Image 1: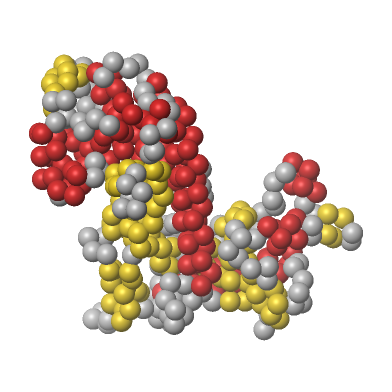
Image 2 (image 1 turned 45 degrees about the vertical axis):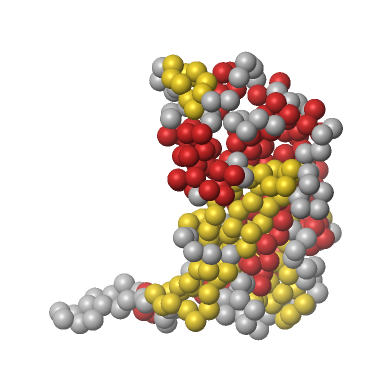
Length: 352
């Protein structure tokens, strides 16, 4: 297949090459491997540069909806295989980004052009240095200093995929889109687990970026006043106000069962099937947090996500089975940003 007639976003009919010229563009912009593996990222960039939507490509192939097409129609054609991976990417993204919760925990995603990222941090001087004050003529102005740490951050490649045996190629896109969403949701859950682990334990094994901890009034119990104290302590001591409280299901249930003079404080939440807030922080349920811990998080500053390679889908043949598959991957890492923008409450420890 060489070229097809399509309408661009200005409703002007053009001829779009989905043969050698398309492959040349993908190789030039993203490298030969991206072209050979039918990179969804490279193909989408090709469409953007030609001001054409994927919907128009599908129409030009004789279909009103992409869901009516079978896997075989797209995957077995060299010219449309990149379009198929772009469709796979969209399906995976629905589960990865919209049906999982990891994005709630990230302050910002930061693009990096190298897979080993230097660790920068802001020196945390005495809190009095942040106070507004009169500064005499010629006197030095108190400043914070950004340092380059001795440690470095290594990004990891994570992803999921589907292999296409002959039988599965008969399925239409409407059916396989459900598989994409399921795999994307699983991928998103694994990302969520990593993000929670970083908030709980930090990134560096030596504890360089570990969160501060705080006990409770009576070890082994969880009281309303403990959560009030912790939230106020975090704001007063570190200047961060938590808006998310991460805990496992057992702890969240114990919190929902908090009583005052024998009466459930959060009975309305239990009746309507919602978990009650922890002071001003919404509950975030994660099995990565042990029974005796709660993480209070100011999500505007606590965690960043370095991205070395954006999420995309490529084709590859399994060396052992010789079955071709579509694999969605990205290279990234979650790293605490403001060390004190999170506070770990230890329910087994007495508050000093």
